[in-house]
Amino acid sequence: MEHENGTGVMEFVLLGLSQTREIQLFLFVLFLIFYSVILPANILIILTIRGDPHLGSPMYFFLANLAFLDICYCSVTHPKMLGDFFSRHKTISYGDCMAQIFFIHFLGAAEIFLLMGMAFDRYVAICHPLRYASMMSREVCCALVGAAWAGGFTHSILQVVLIIRLPFCGPNELDNFFCDITQVIKLACTDVYMLEFFMFFSSGLVTVMCFIILLISYAVLLVRLRAGDPSKGTSKAASTCITHIIIVFIMFGPAIYIYCHPFHSFFLDKVVAVFHTVVFPLMNPIIYTLRNKEIISAMKRLLSRHGLWRGK
Image (cartoon, rainbow, N blue to C red; front, side):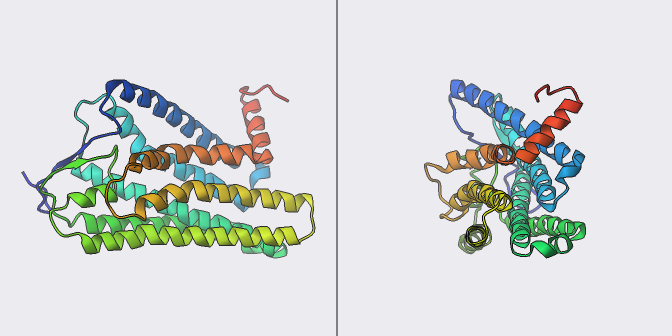
């Protein structure tokens, strides 16, 4: 029985992170804890920002959207990975594999473009403070978020359209716990040199260029803040920029490693993949909440109203 595109592969076998039962149980508990923290933390951020009138600035609007993207992103691989720890035969259908690839790149690229929008917001706030309200209106913010989603969709659909045209006739083993381009493309029964080059450019070099642009942008902003008059507002703006830089490093570091080297297996591939898909979504809420007193105060007020917080 063949797939409609001519491939004889109806499913892929996921080799997972380990074949040892004890290690699998340990990883299941560890990743379940991560997942149990990611969802409530990001949901709490969204509810806090939407429910507190003091958090109505564009920066928090972008942060709420980033938290929503994290919820979606960590839901692409986590449920399947947790279920596979108790499965003797870890398989994923051809269609589900393509869907994983689509949503991973869709949501990942959308986050990159959203971070670009957040950098633009900081630029306007620092360099054009008097025009900030007009330049970063609600309509402009919604347009930037919409552009981020549209850019992510365009990037992802190009990857998937090219992959589904490839013939797969075996083998069908993926040395990972989820489907991604770098693994699947190696199983194609045809020459994929030009396709690898395109994927390297569209996923790897574009990521590097966005990373460099963001770092240069925040470096310029920090220099401008340092050269200005020292004040509480300046210190707060600098702290916000530093927080964004930390997020940029956490997100772009693993992505650059995964997509900027040749599509061959390396020792650290699985470790970096775990960090990229499991740990990274958890870091956003932790970093933003620990470094932002306004969000912490708003969260306390929200939890106090529902009887879940009794602190001062």
